[in-house]
Image 1: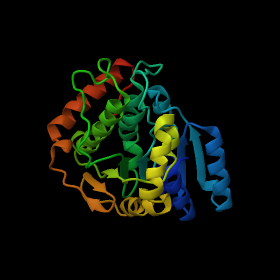
Image 2: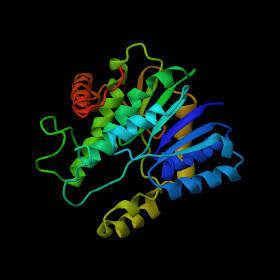
Image 3: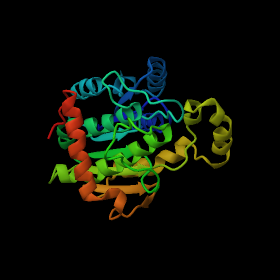
Length: 281
């Protein structure tokens, strides 16, 4: 029996993966921020006969302290870590977390960085470990603001979301550099447009047109998780790969630049250390 850890595990793709693996007889740790959604997922797990293999953990992944505490509660082995948690704040002014980090950076990137490194020993204890970081690899939009990663100047919600996506490209690309010889396969994954509840998290002015677009163009969750399951069940060889659906992306492009990945790793570890959090080597 494998153990699958899924952040954003009570919504959309994360929930779809959780129910799939419960149906396959695996153990699932689903992380979410809303107790009611966790309760609904637990009830569905019971209906599938997997209630004893399902664990919901309520955690605020905008808090690095809470993210570290979450990692400390997860015992090895972990066969797969799927990073799906995201919430879009496209309009409005810059918001800082209680720990002083820009909201989108904390949830969309820093929590993923911390879990990727903090759970490495648990992943290394598995026979064929894999991390899947769900984002938008292959989309040439956004960049890391090297001189102002916290976006204290010229903030916009769109800029924050896109920076987090590009930072995750570099996190995935640089993981094997930081941990040479690791057996973990790190997959940067773009699911394309999926019929999730994401439009409901958008500003009111964007909800109706986005829902209309999703109704025409979005892939149902049940179908969208199939290529994800294929990669999680049979991880690609080597420490790093990037996919858009079933299509492998070239990893020798600027979005995955090794020097930029190393630079971002150093900036991030310094940022975490300033807040009293240490990413495990």
